[in-house]
Image (cartoon, rainbow, N blue to C red; front, side):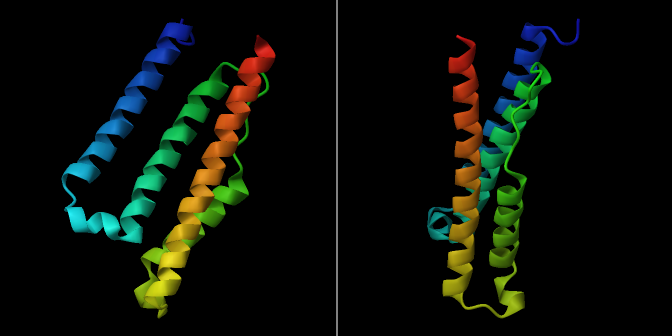
Length: 127
């Protein structure tokens, strides 16, 4: 009985709680001025994307036709994030690094929105 709905729901709640704890640790141990940094916003967006992808993984366990994440958009977001993170080593100006961080946040947000929209479509179609 490992695939029962209550067991699946339990792991979803546990995973969500762990991600909320991770986000809480980031917020508690970061000083106020750091939240004006685009990298801090990018980290929070990446944690949010991880939460949505984890939800997608648990959601697809019980589905015969699983929802697919836009992999190309997630790869683009990771490339933007890495470029913003290593902007100093790459010799980028701070303006370009901020644009890269904004691109990463935007990619993660669009990817998450697409996944959540697919969840909503499936839920309304099943009713």
